[in-house]
Image (cartoon, rainbow, N blue to C red; front, side):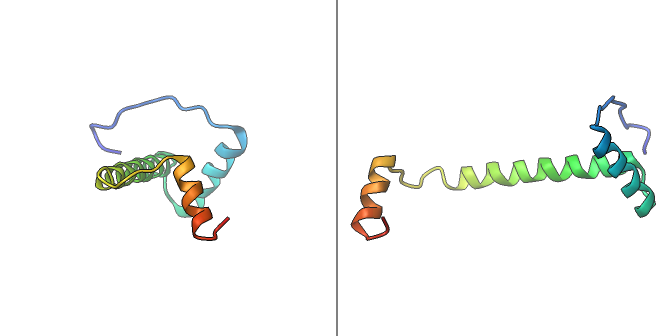
Length: 77
């Protein structure tokens, strides 16, 4: 933990807390390290999802009805 770290209270389900403590002990890391890594990974996934949405913003769209008509026309349904 560095000097600029912030403290927060987080409530875990008992089973999750136990698993987290066991993983911390097994990997010789702190619970804080594991939680920080998990949150960073989650935020990175969100960032990648938003980038994918931005990349696809100009793609043509179709209604659900158009999709069903297209699938039927191509023998998919």
